[in-house]
Length: 556
Image 1 (cartoon, rainbow, N blue to C red):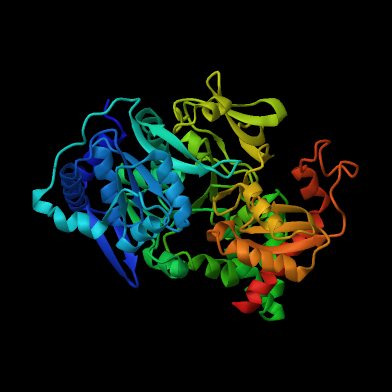
Image 2 (image 1 turned 90 degrees about the horizontal axis):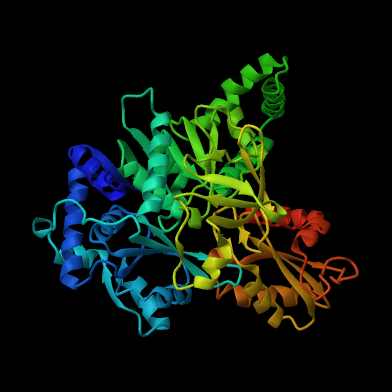
Protein backbone atom coordinates (compact mmCIF):
# COMPACT_ATOMS: atom_id res chain seq x y z
CA UNK A 1 0.00 0.00 0.00
CA UNK A 2 1.22 3.56 -0.67
CA UNK A 3 2.41 5.48 2.38
CA UNK A 4 1.03 8.82 3.58
CA UNK A 5 3.44 10.90 1.50
CA UNK A 6 2.82 8.94 -1.69
CA UNK A 7 -0.91 9.48 -1.13
CA UNK A 8 -0.33 13.22 -0.76
CA UNK A 9 1.67 13.50 -3.97
CA UNK A 10 -0.94 11.45 -5.84
CA UNK A 11 -3.73 13.74 -4.61
CA UNK A 12 -1.78 16.86 -5.65
CA UNK A 13 -1.33 15.40 -9.13
CA UNK A 14 -5.06 14.70 -9.26
CA UNK A 15 -5.71 18.32 -8.21
CA UNK A 16 -3.20 19.76 -10.71
CA UNK A 17 -5.60 22.45 -11.96
CA UNK A 18 -7.49 23.07 -8.72
CA UNK A 19 -6.54 25.44 -5.89
CA UNK A 20 -5.33 23.40 -2.93
CA UNK A 21 -3.60 25.99 -0.75
CA UNK A 22 -3.85 29.73 -0.30
CA UNK A 23 -2.68 32.55 1.95
CA UNK A 24 -4.59 35.69 2.90
CA UNK A 25 -2.80 39.00 2.36
CA UNK A 26 -5.03 41.89 3.32
CA UNK A 27 -8.17 41.33 1.27
CA UNK A 28 -6.49 39.22 -1.41
CA UNK A 29 -5.62 35.54 -1.76
CA UNK A 30 -2.31 34.13 -2.94
CA UNK A 31 -3.16 30.65 -4.19
CA UNK A 32 -1.46 27.59 -5.68
CA UNK A 33 -2.93 24.65 -7.53
CA UNK A 34 -1.79 21.10 -6.98
CA UNK A 35 0.56 21.35 -9.98
CA UNK A 36 2.01 24.68 -8.81
CA UNK A 37 2.64 23.33 -5.32
CA UNK A 38 4.38 20.27 -6.79
CA UNK A 39 6.55 22.60 -8.90
CA UNK A 40 7.66 24.40 -5.74
CA UNK A 41 8.33 21.06 -4.06
CA UNK A 42 10.45 19.95 -7.03
CA UNK A 43 12.45 23.20 -6.86
CA UNK A 44 13.10 22.75 -3.14
CA UNK A 45 14.12 19.11 -3.67
CA UNK A 46 16.74 20.23 -6.18
CA UNK A 47 18.13 22.67 -3.63
CA UNK A 48 18.37 19.94 -0.97
CA UNK A 49 20.36 17.71 -3.29
CA UNK A 50 22.65 20.56 -4.35
CA UNK A 51 23.30 21.34 -0.68
CA UNK A 52 24.34 17.75 -0.06
CA UNK A 53 21.55 16.81 2.33
CA UNK A 54 20.95 13.06 2.43
CA UNK A 55 18.21 10.77 3.65
CA UNK A 56 18.32 10.52 7.43
CA UNK A 57 19.89 13.95 7.94
CA UNK A 58 18.01 16.39 10.18
CA UNK A 59 16.93 19.79 8.87
CA UNK A 60 15.35 22.50 11.04
CA UNK A 61 12.42 24.40 9.49
CA UNK A 62 11.65 27.74 11.11
CA UNK A 63 9.01 30.20 10.00
CA UNK A 64 5.32 31.10 10.17
CA UNK A 65 2.77 29.13 8.17
CA UNK A 66 2.98 29.77 4.44
CA UNK A 67 2.71 28.04 1.08
CA UNK A 68 6.49 27.96 0.81
CA UNK A 69 6.76 26.41 4.30
CA UNK A 70 4.50 23.59 3.11
CA UNK A 71 6.46 23.14 -0.13
CA UNK A 72 9.79 22.89 1.73
CA UNK A 73 8.31 20.51 4.28
CA UNK A 74 7.03 18.21 1.51
CA UNK A 75 10.37 18.43 -0.31
CA UNK A 76 12.36 17.45 2.78
CA UNK A 77 10.10 14.48 3.44
CA UNK A 78 10.22 13.45 -0.23
CA UNK A 79 14.02 13.30 0.00
CA UNK A 80 13.90 11.27 3.22
CA UNK A 81 15.31 14.15 5.30
CA UNK A 82 14.08 14.36 8.90
CA UNK A 83 12.11 17.60 9.38
CA UNK A 84 12.48 19.46 12.68
CA UNK A 85 9.73 22.14 12.67
CA UNK A 86 10.37 24.97 15.13
CA UNK A 87 8.09 27.64 16.56
CA UNK A 88 8.76 30.99 14.88
CA UNK A 89 7.97 32.94 18.07
CA UNK A 90 10.30 30.90 20.29
CA UNK A 91 13.17 32.70 22.03
CA UNK A 92 16.48 32.30 20.11
CA UNK A 93 18.19 30.62 23.08
CA UNK A 94 15.46 27.97 23.22
CA UNK A 95 15.65 27.40 19.48
CA UNK A 96 19.39 26.96 19.82
CA UNK A 97 18.93 24.43 22.62
CA UNK A 98 16.64 22.31 20.45
CA UNK A 99 19.00 22.40 17.51
CA UNK A 100 21.98 21.52 19.69
CA UNK A 101 20.01 18.45 20.72
CA UNK A 102 19.19 17.18 17.22
CA UNK A 103 22.21 18.71 15.37
CA UNK A 104 20.56 19.56 12.04
CA UNK A 105 22.84 19.88 9.03
CA UNK A 106 20.82 22.85 7.80
CA UNK A 107 18.49 25.50 9.22
CA UNK A 108 15.88 26.74 6.77
CA UNK A 109 14.35 30.03 7.97
CA UNK A 110 11.66 32.28 6.55
CA UNK A 111 14.13 35.19 6.48
CA UNK A 112 17.78 35.93 7.26
CA UNK A 113 16.99 37.84 10.48
CA UNK A 114 15.57 34.71 12.08
CA UNK A 115 18.75 32.75 11.36
CA UNK A 116 20.94 35.59 12.58
CA UNK A 117 19.08 35.74 15.91
CA UNK A 118 19.91 32.07 16.50
CA UNK A 119 23.54 32.54 15.45
CA UNK A 120 23.94 35.36 17.99
CA UNK A 121 23.28 32.97 20.89
CA UNK A 122 24.86 29.93 19.20
CA UNK A 123 27.88 30.77 17.04
CA UNK A 124 28.18 27.10 15.99
CA UNK A 125 24.69 27.12 14.48
CA UNK A 126 24.39 25.24 11.17
CA UNK A 127 24.28 26.93 7.80
CA UNK A 128 21.08 28.95 7.41
CA UNK A 129 19.15 28.98 4.14
CA UNK A 130 16.18 31.28 3.58
CA UNK A 131 12.96 30.60 1.73
CA UNK A 132 13.93 33.23 -0.87
CA UNK A 133 17.36 31.71 -1.27
CA UNK A 134 16.00 28.24 -1.89
CA UNK A 135 13.55 29.19 -4.62
CA UNK A 136 15.86 31.72 -6.30
CA UNK A 137 18.80 29.31 -6.50
CA UNK A 138 16.71 26.36 -7.72
CA UNK A 139 14.36 27.62 -10.46
CA UNK A 140 11.16 25.69 -10.99
CA UNK A 141 12.22 24.41 -14.41
CA UNK A 142 15.28 22.72 -12.87
CA UNK A 143 13.40 20.97 -10.08
CA UNK A 144 13.34 17.32 -9.07
CA UNK A 145 9.90 16.13 -10.11
CA UNK A 146 8.34 12.75 -9.53
CA UNK A 147 7.14 10.76 -6.55
CA UNK A 148 8.82 10.86 -3.15
CA UNK A 149 11.72 8.53 -2.45
CA UNK A 150 10.73 5.13 -1.03
CA UNK A 151 10.67 4.83 2.76
CA UNK A 152 10.19 2.07 5.32
CA UNK A 153 7.50 2.07 7.99
CA UNK A 154 10.13 2.60 10.70
CA UNK A 155 11.89 5.50 8.92
CA UNK A 156 11.91 8.68 10.96
CA UNK A 157 9.86 11.48 9.37
CA UNK A 158 9.97 14.32 11.89
CA UNK A 159 11.21 15.38 15.33
CA UNK A 160 8.76 17.70 17.06
CA UNK A 161 9.95 19.34 20.27
CA UNK A 162 7.74 19.49 23.33
CA UNK A 163 8.55 20.72 26.83
CA UNK A 164 8.97 18.22 29.66
CA UNK A 165 8.47 18.64 33.41
CA UNK A 166 12.12 19.59 33.79
CA UNK A 167 11.66 22.46 31.37
CA UNK A 168 14.07 20.96 28.87
CA UNK A 169 12.55 20.44 25.42
CA UNK A 170 12.33 16.83 24.28
CA UNK A 171 12.32 15.76 20.66
CA UNK A 172 9.36 13.51 19.89
CA UNK A 173 10.21 11.16 17.02
CA UNK A 174 7.40 10.24 14.62
CA UNK A 175 7.87 7.64 11.90
CA UNK A 176 6.13 6.58 8.70
CA UNK A 177 3.94 4.03 10.48
CA UNK A 178 2.68 6.66 12.94
CA UNK A 179 1.68 9.03 10.16
CA UNK A 180 0.23 6.36 7.89
CA UNK A 181 -2.19 5.39 10.63
CA UNK A 182 -3.08 8.85 11.90
CA UNK A 183 -3.69 10.32 8.46
CA UNK A 184 -5.90 7.39 7.53
CA UNK A 185 -7.99 8.24 10.61
CA UNK A 186 -8.15 12.00 10.04
CA UNK A 187 -8.87 11.84 6.31
CA UNK A 188 -11.63 9.32 7.01
CA UNK A 189 -13.02 11.69 9.65
CA UNK A 190 -12.98 14.56 7.14
CA UNK A 191 -14.80 12.42 4.60
CA UNK A 192 -17.67 12.15 7.08
CA UNK A 193 -17.77 15.93 7.35
CA UNK A 194 -18.56 16.47 3.68
CA UNK A 195 -20.44 13.37 2.64
CA UNK A 196 -23.36 15.48 1.37
CA UNK A 197 -21.44 18.16 -0.57
CA UNK A 198 -20.06 18.33 -4.09
CA UNK A 199 -17.56 21.13 -3.51
CA UNK A 200 -14.11 20.68 -1.93
CA UNK A 201 -14.08 21.34 1.78
CA UNK A 202 -12.93 24.84 2.74
CA UNK A 203 -10.68 24.73 5.79
CA UNK A 204 -9.10 27.75 7.54
CA UNK A 205 -5.91 27.26 9.55
CA UNK A 206 -4.14 29.66 11.92
CA UNK A 207 -2.38 27.26 14.32
CA UNK A 208 1.40 26.94 13.70
CA UNK A 209 2.53 23.86 11.79
CA UNK A 210 5.24 23.05 14.34
CA UNK A 211 2.41 21.72 16.57
CA UNK A 212 1.75 18.07 15.79
CA UNK A 213 -2.05 18.31 15.52
CA UNK A 214 -1.87 21.43 13.33
CA UNK A 215 0.60 19.71 11.01
CA UNK A 216 -1.69 16.66 10.84
CA UNK A 217 -4.53 18.99 9.78
CA UNK A 218 -2.39 20.40 6.97
CA UNK A 219 -1.35 16.97 5.71
CA UNK A 220 -4.94 15.70 5.93
CA UNK A 221 -6.14 18.58 3.76
CA UNK A 222 -3.47 17.96 1.13
CA UNK A 223 -4.28 14.24 1.05
CA UNK A 224 -7.91 14.76 0.05
CA UNK A 225 -10.05 17.22 -1.93
CA UNK A 226 -9.77 20.35 0.20
CA UNK A 227 -8.96 24.04 -0.12
CA UNK A 228 -6.77 25.00 2.86
CA UNK A 229 -6.50 28.73 3.65
CA UNK A 230 -3.63 29.91 5.84
CA UNK A 231 -3.78 32.90 8.14
CA UNK A 232 -1.05 35.45 7.48
CA UNK A 233 -1.77 37.88 10.34
CA UNK A 234 -3.13 36.73 13.69
CA UNK A 235 -3.96 40.33 14.53
CA UNK A 236 -6.56 40.27 11.74
CA UNK A 237 -7.92 36.83 12.48
CA UNK A 238 -11.59 37.85 12.59
CA UNK A 239 -11.35 39.56 9.19
CA UNK A 240 -9.46 36.61 7.71
CA UNK A 241 -12.09 34.14 8.88
CA UNK A 242 -14.88 36.13 7.26
CA UNK A 243 -12.90 36.54 4.04
CA UNK A 244 -11.98 32.86 3.75
CA UNK A 245 -15.60 31.82 4.51
CA UNK A 246 -14.58 28.34 5.69
CA UNK A 247 -16.73 25.29 6.25
CA UNK A 248 -14.58 24.38 9.25
CA UNK A 249 -11.53 25.55 11.11
CA UNK A 250 -9.42 24.18 13.92
CA UNK A 251 -8.99 25.94 17.25
CA UNK A 252 -7.52 26.01 20.69
CA UNK A 253 -9.87 26.93 23.57
CA UNK A 254 -8.27 30.38 23.94
CA UNK A 255 -9.87 31.76 20.79
CA UNK A 256 -13.30 30.29 21.44
CA UNK A 257 -13.38 31.51 25.03
CA UNK A 258 -12.26 34.95 23.87
CA UNK A 259 -15.13 35.06 21.35
CA UNK A 260 -17.65 34.03 24.00
CA UNK A 261 -16.33 36.60 26.48
CA UNK A 262 -16.31 39.34 23.84
CA UNK A 263 -19.90 38.64 22.82
CA UNK A 264 -21.13 38.68 26.41
CA UNK A 265 -19.25 41.91 27.17
CA UNK A 266 -20.67 43.57 24.06
CA UNK A 267 -24.21 42.48 24.93
CA UNK A 268 -23.84 43.82 28.46
CA UNK A 269 -23.46 47.29 26.94
CA UNK A 270 -26.57 47.02 24.78
CA UNK A 271 -30.03 48.20 25.74
CA UNK A 272 -32.17 46.39 28.28
CA UNK A 273 -34.42 44.89 25.58
CA UNK A 274 -31.54 43.14 23.77
CA UNK A 275 -30.10 41.95 27.09
CA UNK A 276 -33.48 40.55 28.09
CA UNK A 277 -33.95 38.75 24.76
CA UNK A 278 -30.48 37.23 25.06
CA UNK A 279 -30.93 36.02 28.64
CA UNK A 280 -34.40 34.60 28.06
CA UNK A 281 -33.44 33.09 24.71
CA UNK A 282 -30.42 31.42 26.29
CA UNK A 283 -32.54 30.06 29.14
CA UNK A 284 -35.06 28.71 26.62
CA UNK A 285 -32.29 27.03 24.60
CA UNK A 286 -30.91 25.43 27.76
CA UNK A 287 -34.35 24.07 28.63
CA UNK A 288 -34.89 22.62 25.19
CA UNK A 289 -31.42 21.06 25.12
CA UNK A 290 -32.36 19.27 28.34
CA UNK A 291 -35.60 17.96 26.81
CA UNK A 292 -37.92 20.49 28.44
CA UNK A 293 -40.42 22.72 26.66
CA UNK A 294 -41.17 26.41 26.95
CA UNK A 295 -39.69 29.73 25.94
CA UNK A 296 -39.97 29.04 22.22
CA UNK A 297 -40.89 32.62 21.36
CA UNK A 298 -37.90 34.03 23.24
CA UNK A 299 -35.58 31.52 21.58
CA UNK A 300 -36.95 32.42 18.15
CA UNK A 301 -36.41 36.14 18.85
CA UNK A 302 -32.86 35.52 20.11
CA UNK A 303 -31.99 33.42 17.06
CA UNK A 304 -33.24 36.10 14.68
CA UNK A 305 -31.90 39.19 16.45
CA UNK A 306 -28.74 37.97 18.19
CA UNK A 307 -27.54 34.40 17.58
CA UNK A 308 -27.67 34.66 13.80
CA UNK A 309 -25.71 37.92 13.75
CA UNK A 310 -22.98 36.40 15.92
CA UNK A 311 -22.78 33.41 13.63
CA UNK A 312 -22.38 35.67 10.59
CA UNK A 313 -18.99 36.75 11.93
CA UNK A 314 -17.64 33.34 10.91
CA UNK A 315 -18.77 33.67 7.30
CA UNK A 316 -21.75 32.23 5.43
CA UNK A 317 -20.43 28.67 4.97
CA UNK A 318 -19.49 27.62 8.52
CA UNK A 319 -20.73 24.15 9.49
CA UNK A 320 -18.73 23.56 12.64
CA UNK A 321 -15.51 24.00 14.60
CA UNK A 322 -12.87 21.58 15.83
CA UNK A 323 -11.04 22.23 19.10
CA UNK A 324 -8.02 20.59 20.69
CA UNK A 325 -4.80 21.09 22.70
CA UNK A 326 -6.70 21.36 25.99
CA UNK A 327 -10.21 20.46 27.18
CA UNK A 328 -12.80 23.07 26.26
CA UNK A 329 -14.98 24.42 29.06
CA UNK A 330 -18.48 22.85 28.79
CA UNK A 331 -20.14 26.25 29.00
CA UNK A 332 -18.12 27.46 25.98
CA UNK A 333 -19.07 24.40 23.95
CA UNK A 334 -22.73 24.92 24.89
CA UNK A 335 -22.54 28.63 24.00
CA UNK A 336 -21.50 27.79 20.42
CA UNK A 337 -24.08 25.01 20.20
CA UNK A 338 -26.70 27.60 21.11
CA UNK A 339 -25.52 29.67 18.14
CA UNK A 340 -25.97 26.64 15.91
CA UNK A 341 -22.22 25.98 15.64
CA UNK A 342 -21.22 22.48 16.77
CA UNK A 343 -17.75 22.04 18.23
CA UNK A 344 -16.02 18.68 17.93
CA UNK A 345 -13.21 18.11 20.39
CA UNK A 346 -10.03 16.12 19.88
CA UNK A 347 -7.49 15.00 22.46
CA UNK A 348 -3.93 13.89 22.04
CA UNK A 349 -0.27 14.57 22.63
CA UNK A 350 2.70 15.01 20.35
CA UNK A 351 3.77 11.51 21.42
CA UNK A 352 0.48 10.10 20.08
CA UNK A 353 0.91 11.78 16.70
CA UNK A 354 -1.25 14.67 17.90
CA UNK A 355 -4.51 12.77 18.35
CA UNK A 356 -5.96 9.98 20.53
CA UNK A 357 -9.67 10.78 20.52
CA UNK A 358 -12.09 12.64 18.24
CA UNK A 359 -15.75 13.49 18.53
CA UNK A 360 -17.75 11.71 15.84
CA UNK A 361 -19.36 14.33 13.54
CA UNK A 362 -22.30 11.98 13.00
CA UNK A 363 -23.14 11.75 16.71
CA UNK A 364 -24.19 14.50 19.13
CA UNK A 365 -21.23 15.72 21.18
CA UNK A 366 -21.12 15.46 24.97
CA UNK A 367 -20.02 18.74 26.54
CA UNK A 368 -16.94 18.34 28.66
CA UNK A 369 -15.80 15.20 26.84
CA UNK A 370 -13.26 14.83 24.05
CA UNK A 371 -14.75 11.99 22.02
CA UNK A 372 -13.88 8.37 21.44
CA UNK A 373 -10.54 6.71 20.75
CA UNK A 374 -9.64 6.88 17.07
CA UNK A 375 -9.85 3.58 15.14
CA UNK A 376 -7.03 1.14 15.67
CA UNK A 377 -5.81 2.36 19.05
CA UNK A 378 -6.59 1.29 22.61
CA UNK A 379 -7.02 3.50 25.65
CA UNK A 380 -7.40 2.62 29.30
CA UNK A 381 -6.71 4.07 32.73
CA UNK A 382 -3.91 2.91 34.98
CA UNK A 383 -2.70 3.90 38.43
CA UNK A 384 -4.05 7.25 39.66
CA UNK A 385 -6.53 7.22 36.73
CA UNK A 386 -3.70 7.97 34.31
CA UNK A 387 -4.66 7.58 30.66
CA UNK A 388 -2.62 4.92 28.86
CA UNK A 389 -2.60 4.60 25.06
CA UNK A 390 -1.43 1.83 22.75
CA UNK A 391 -1.46 1.57 18.97
CA UNK A 392 0.33 2.42 15.72
CA UNK A 393 0.07 6.14 16.47
CA UNK A 394 2.43 5.92 19.47
CA UNK A 395 5.87 7.46 18.90
CA UNK A 396 8.93 5.18 18.96
CA UNK A 397 10.73 7.38 21.50
CA UNK A 398 12.36 10.69 22.38
CA UNK A 399 15.41 11.75 20.40
CA UNK A 400 18.56 10.73 22.31
CA UNK A 401 16.64 10.18 25.57
CA UNK A 402 16.38 6.42 26.13
CA UNK A 403 15.75 6.72 29.88
CA UNK A 404 12.85 9.13 29.45
CA UNK A 405 11.49 6.98 26.64
CA UNK A 406 11.56 3.92 28.88
CA UNK A 407 9.80 5.88 31.63
CA UNK A 408 6.74 6.67 29.48
CA UNK A 409 6.62 3.55 27.27
CA UNK A 410 5.97 0.41 29.29
CA UNK A 411 4.86 -2.91 27.79
CA UNK A 412 3.54 -1.23 24.68
CA UNK A 413 1.53 1.42 26.56
CA UNK A 414 2.27 5.13 26.51
CA UNK A 415 1.75 6.86 29.87
CA UNK A 416 0.21 10.23 29.00
CA UNK A 417 0.48 11.91 32.41
CA UNK A 418 -3.17 12.93 32.01
CA UNK A 419 -5.93 11.76 34.29
CA UNK A 420 -9.28 10.83 32.84
CA UNK A 421 -12.23 8.49 32.66
CA UNK A 422 -14.41 7.01 29.95
CA UNK A 423 -18.20 6.60 30.01
CA UNK A 424 -20.42 3.85 28.64
CA UNK A 425 -20.55 5.53 25.23
CA UNK A 426 -16.77 5.41 24.95
CA UNK A 427 -16.37 9.18 25.33
CA UNK A 428 -13.37 10.31 27.34
CA UNK A 429 -13.15 13.14 29.84
CA UNK A 430 -9.80 14.69 30.79
CA UNK A 431 -9.90 15.47 34.50
CA UNK A 432 -6.39 16.64 35.31
CA UNK A 433 -2.67 16.05 34.99
CA UNK A 434 -0.42 13.80 37.00
CA UNK A 435 2.65 15.64 35.86
CA UNK A 436 3.30 19.22 36.89
CA UNK A 437 3.37 20.33 33.28
CA UNK A 438 0.97 23.20 32.65
CA UNK A 439 -0.93 23.11 29.37
CA UNK A 440 -2.31 26.51 28.41
CA UNK A 441 -5.48 26.60 26.38
CA UNK A 442 -3.37 27.93 23.50
CA UNK A 443 -1.76 24.48 23.35
CA UNK A 444 1.63 25.56 24.72
CA UNK A 445 3.25 23.28 27.30
CA UNK A 446 4.99 25.05 30.18
CA UNK A 447 7.13 23.49 32.89
CA UNK A 448 6.52 25.70 35.97
CA UNK A 449 9.64 24.86 37.99
CA UNK A 450 12.26 26.82 36.00
CA UNK A 451 10.09 29.95 35.97
CA UNK A 452 9.34 29.63 39.68
CA UNK A 453 13.03 29.32 40.43
CA UNK A 454 13.95 32.41 38.42
CA UNK A 455 11.29 34.51 40.16
CA UNK A 456 12.25 33.22 43.62
CA UNK A 457 15.90 34.11 43.00
CA UNK A 458 14.85 37.74 42.63
CA UNK A 459 12.56 37.67 45.69
CA UNK A 460 14.68 36.89 48.77
CA UNK A 461 11.71 37.36 51.08
CA UNK A 462 9.48 34.89 49.24
CA UNK A 463 8.75 31.54 50.85
CA UNK A 464 7.14 29.95 47.80
CA UNK A 465 6.34 30.89 44.20
CA UNK A 466 3.77 28.73 42.43
CA UNK A 467 2.91 29.17 38.76
CA UNK A 468 -0.72 28.43 37.81
CA UNK A 469 -2.57 28.45 34.50
CA UNK A 470 -3.45 24.91 33.45
CA UNK A 471 -6.32 25.25 30.94
CA UNK A 472 -6.10 29.05 31.06
CA UNK A 473 -4.88 31.50 28.44
CA UNK A 474 -1.76 32.65 30.30
CA UNK A 475 0.28 32.14 33.46
CA UNK A 476 -0.17 33.75 36.86
CA UNK A 477 1.67 33.26 40.15
CA UNK A 478 0.89 32.66 43.81
CA UNK A 479 3.55 34.15 46.11
CA UNK A 480 3.98 33.68 49.87
CA UNK A 481 6.33 35.35 52.34
CA UNK A 482 7.48 38.83 53.23
CA UNK A 483 7.30 40.53 49.87
CA UNK A 484 5.66 43.66 48.50
CA UNK A 485 3.65 44.01 45.33
CA UNK A 486 6.29 46.31 43.87
CA UNK A 487 9.09 43.80 44.50
CA UNK A 488 7.10 40.97 42.93
CA UNK A 489 6.26 43.07 39.88
CA UNK A 490 9.91 44.09 39.50
CA UNK A 491 10.97 40.44 39.61
CA UNK A 492 8.37 39.51 37.01
CA UNK A 493 9.45 42.35 34.71
CA UNK A 494 13.01 41.02 34.68
CA UNK A 495 12.08 37.35 34.32
CA UNK A 496 9.41 37.97 31.67
CA UNK A 497 11.88 39.88 29.50
CA UNK A 498 13.86 36.66 29.11
CA UNK A 499 10.90 34.44 28.21
CA UNK A 500 8.68 33.88 25.15
CA UNK A 501 5.19 35.34 25.35
CA UNK A 502 3.42 32.15 26.45
CA UNK A 503 5.81 31.58 29.39
CA UNK A 504 5.47 35.09 30.78
CA UNK A 505 3.63 35.58 34.07
CA UNK A 506 0.87 38.16 33.61
CA UNK A 507 -0.47 38.61 37.16
CA UNK A 508 0.14 37.51 40.74
CA UNK A 509 -1.37 37.43 44.20
CA UNK A 510 0.48 37.53 47.51
CA UNK A 511 -0.96 35.02 49.98
CA UNK A 512 -0.79 35.47 53.74
CA UNK A 513 -0.70 31.71 54.33
CA UNK A 514 2.73 30.11 53.90
CA UNK A 515 2.70 26.55 52.56
CA UNK A 516 3.83 23.90 55.08
CA UNK A 517 3.44 20.16 55.60
CA UNK A 518 1.20 21.00 58.56
CA UNK A 519 -1.39 22.79 56.45
CA UNK A 520 -1.13 19.99 53.86
CA UNK A 521 0.19 22.28 51.14
CA UNK A 522 3.65 20.69 51.12
CA UNK A 523 4.71 17.06 51.23
CA UNK A 524 6.79 15.82 54.15
CA UNK A 525 9.97 16.47 52.20
CA UNK A 526 8.91 19.97 51.22
CA UNK A 527 7.53 19.48 47.70
CA UNK A 528 4.57 21.53 46.53
CA UNK A 529 1.21 19.75 46.50
CA UNK A 530 0.01 21.60 43.44
CA UNK A 531 -3.46 20.12 43.16
CA UNK A 532 -4.17 20.92 46.81
CA UNK A 533 -2.82 24.45 46.42
CA UNK A 534 -4.97 25.05 43.35
CA UNK A 535 -8.08 23.80 45.16
CA UNK A 536 -7.38 25.68 48.42
CA UNK A 537 -6.83 28.99 46.64
CA UNK A 538 -9.31 28.56 43.81
CA UNK A 539 -11.14 31.77 44.68
CA UNK A 540 -7.94 33.80 44.79
CA UNK A 541 -6.82 32.34 41.46
CA UNK A 542 -10.17 33.06 39.79
CA UNK A 543 -10.14 36.59 41.17
CA UNK A 544 -6.61 37.13 39.88
CA UNK A 545 -7.61 36.13 36.34
CA UNK A 546 -10.76 38.24 36.49
CA UNK A 547 -8.79 41.31 37.55
CA UNK A 548 -6.26 40.82 34.78
CA UNK A 549 -9.02 40.35 32.18
CA UNK A 550 -10.71 43.56 33.31
CA UNK A 551 -7.41 45.47 33.26
CA UNK A 552 -6.58 44.14 29.80
CA UNK A 553 -10.04 45.11 28.55
CA UNK A 554 -9.77 48.64 29.90
CA UNK A 555 -6.40 49.08 28.16
CA UNK A 556 -7.63 47.70 24.82
